Length: 160
Image 1 (cartoon, rainbow, N blue to C red):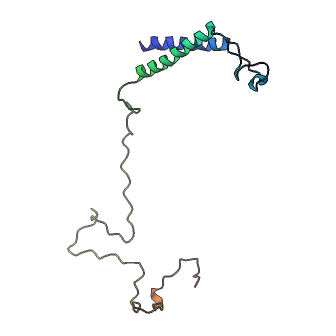
Image 2 (cartoon, rainbow, N blue to C red; image 1 turned 120 degrees about the vertical axis):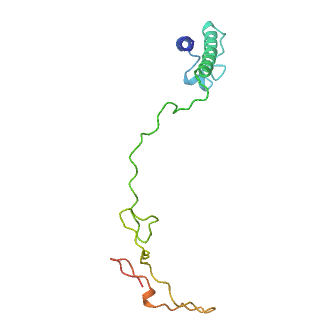
Image 3 (cartoon, helix red, strand yellow; image 1 turned 90 degrees about the vertical axis):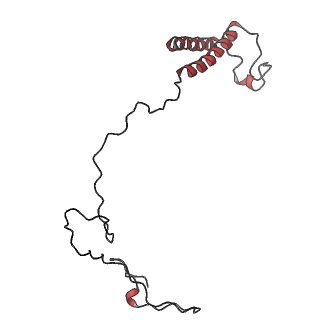
């Protein structure tokens, strides 16, 4: 049914194309657009309705109704654009994450034998906090020891 309707629609489209191309222009020169050459309107003089203009109106209406009808007939209810497309294939498991420095693993590796003692905590590599606190109400900068001052990265000199 759909293919018959689509075939009729293509025929209507071709007929509409032919009828529009067969029509004569209505004062399309530049003088007619600016009011010259005895044109009575901006688009030329109004002529009586001919067979070609009536055919254009009928075929244009059939074109619009056919487009609407084909749109309704071609629509399938509630399906997705990706229906019938399979998901990605199963891939190999992801590589294990590399251990980060300063992070304690949550599980013990199977190759390490369990000992009776506890494992030592990892050493901290951060800068220790200053041991002196600023005096309350004083506007001066607190004194810090030289050990508490962070060192600049290698290859750069400190600006102070």
